[in-house]
Length: 151
Image (tube, rainbow, N blue to C red):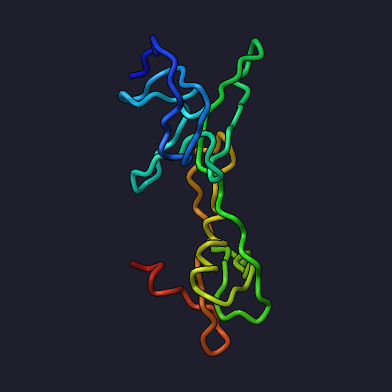
């Protein structure tokens, strides 16, 4: 719970690594500035405050009366450089004839990063899709599903 600070202190945010702004509130007893008080926790439990490079601030219109909401979320991963001869691919899986290689990559890790970057939902999108991106590897001229994707 956030409480107003009664005495002036410096921000002690550990997520952004050294913020020196004046603390204006506390978060779980830690004095933080207004920007560091806005944060998101990733799937591994790591805290990322609004000052961190891997965070983005989203402002969405909420409809009537020009109401908006602002929140912090993790930014999408960077898109890796494609390799036209790479044996790994970010592959669009869909029903019908639309399945195809989106980009080729030299390693499984870079293909998985491309999948994560493509799959990152736009702000406000909470839709579950039947289609999606996956990692494939070229074997004997065919793009096959990566074993790690199946498990």
